[in-house]
Image (cartoon, rainbow, N blue to C red; front, side, top):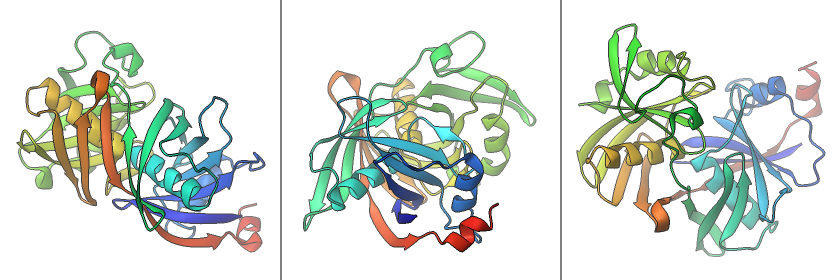
Length: 283
């Protein structure tokens, strides 16, 4: 089984061509492939698949714990780079079918290869039940009871659920404590991603993200979009913003119709082949 390893601002992925639809990878195999030390090591695994719609390609995305997710902002850029650079899809812009709907991806080329991409991440979902989130009230201004007391959060979906906390200092934020607690909080039936955002001014934010099914990562595209939307809704951001994550910067802006546009890099790291010996060891 051949694969290519990519990263978007340090958020790393195993990408595999499954356009013929022959691969059958269950959650335990995906978890083993993503395991650092004994597997390839990655935050997630992406399958390039044949779309069911008129899109150019479909993205099957899996977290490192083997669970499937609807959308990944850094991952979709890496998938676009894979199918373009491998000569599998020539379209630019490229339309990618995801579990959250079809997304338009505009490529930034250097010497004929993808260096970065801007993704139309669509409209944020602000209706509580569609995030999904239980209970009543305004999800954009929610107080959640946690072990240490009360956390004031802004909740929304960018194709997957997010819970944003605004903090005074992102470096000292309780990411490893509050992150996993909020991820599995009873208000979120499908769990949630958790963002810790420090707004420097209305054009710049620093962000750390506890990703659902992964843990803290160096970057999260949908998390950056969610934090950008949350900051706008609270009057803390303009129509464009640089979001600085541990892995680097993403550029966010409001596009037509209120769509969130995200620009960031995609980098090929290495290529490899999973050995039959390793696969047999999983039996």
